[in-house]
Length: 206
Image (cartoon, rainbow, N blue to C red; front, side, top):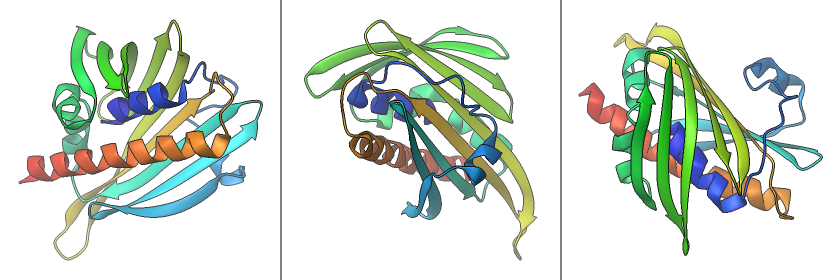
């Protein structure tokens, strides 16, 4: 889900390249940044959305949330790209071109408005803890993302397993579009994708 939602947002805002100076894996940077944050109720869960535009046409966003499911279950659903793609608007085709224990190459064909796009992106993963992804496109350029899955242990009277998930993304728009507009579009698409992902996790947990 994370990657499908990210690519949908890239196609709308025309991202061209990622800023390699900002370490996406260092979540502590957000604590000292000037990122705006807001909580949203998505399906049954609270998602904290962070957005930051530090200048030089650089845009960063982050979605942070907890789910009442084991980490392995959430991880398994997160890497089922074909299943998630079926529920995402505009997705025409998703093919896994290469896969081994730590790396995947996936091609995604989507239609946004009247335009067809084909993306090929690389995913590196250390199951079931972290996932990084990178997208290169001849017209739209490059984008990066990072996901982290952390076990929180069992909580509550029912001793349900809890998992904390982070999704961090960086974009650099190629066209002159107001930062707020770009971030709003991305937030809308990612939150909509997370809703579908949460529903899939609930089905898997039954």
